[in-house]
Length: 167
Length: 415
Ligand code: FES
Image 1: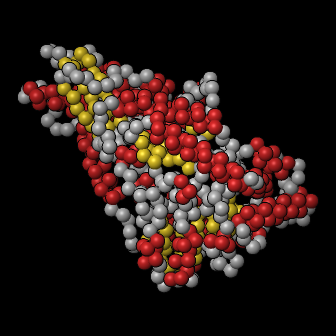
Image 2: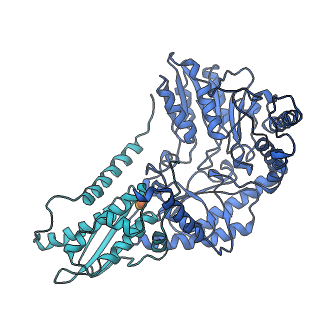
């Protein structure tokens, strides 16, 4: 069997039905976006960060599938009260495990959530023009993936506009 | 990955099903992707599994002769509804996909090696599109006729494209996703006047039993029809092949009553297909106009209740009586199908998120919908069994579902 009807876990269903920490945060310290509305999937992450670099509150908005909504919600819960350094270390795999697994085609939705979080953390330090030692200079896998997805969306939407006519 | 194990999947799916317990109403609107079988159809089929006609229709014993008699009589009914000459022109296949493959491959493959051109439209179902694309690997060239913003094919482009080299044109009578009723009669005459040799195939799965459709009147050479789209069982369809039009088998095996499709005939499904056809064509006009009314009730009701929506496909007479396809901006389609399901309304979406290849419906793209418009699209098909109360319920559920999901999208600017 090659195709399954998105066997979302109970956890995902629960978070999809009752997402936590939803909505724009007007007093956010920093926010970041991942994904591209032109391809649909898009997440915005808002963080409120204390003086000593602890995430006091995180919220999100998602224009994506149930997996996207659930992983984003899970991530906002998880990072609450965490130091930025520890939040940075959460990988997409941790996130996927925590929501009870995801179908392979939906991995990228979890990756996007991490991508958005890491971008927000980077933006935080960029605003302050102070990069801590633990913050890698190079983009991490999740950030690259987010970037790749955005690029891909651009390419695809361009390709789809040119009609495949003739031979 | 552990997420891919079947136990993981089944466990989760059981929970997903359980989450639907206690629904006060259920409305099935996904006939496009698999029909629900009408009660009388089911009853008509049952005896043929084990009481009569369960034998092989080509064999010399009573259950075989009964099967032969049944298959012939079922085919004769369909001959009447299609307006063709005889049952020799009907080939039962296991469904629309197989009939389309038979039409495309069976009418062209013998020409391979000689350079030949195939023409389809940009909005064909995947069984036509992929079969045509496969033919490119056999040396055929493929031209896709563009459509306008309502999905109507560009007849001028069609005329320009047909040449002496053209072997096959395949254009659906009614678009399966957006319900556009194509000017097939005109298209056939354009094609035939440029090159009478061209074989004209139409996938009429969404036309048969839904709009007046007569192969003789339209002058098509090949036509696909399907049972599940008219509340018959899935797993059965047919390809009409006009007398003297050359189509070859694409599968080999024991040839039974069906010249172009080997293997043992599925008598109960054929009976069900014929019964579903009968029921559909009984009071055809009354059924059609009721479906049209329910369709418009849904379309108008949604447009009145919800802002930022777009109807995909035409309005009115040129739209199939059963088709409702609407894009809800700022609302992702897969999430919407799940949210609706949890409320007992079953639909499908053209969103990229619902597809394995994560690309949106090619039909919506072809009519010029932007990604984010396709992203929030929902396809619904009403049937002759739906009632006003069903539509009232759907109109109660959809605005709430869209409202909740738009709340999650929040301030993200999408479209
Ligand atoms: S957001 Fe599109 S697949 Fe998850």
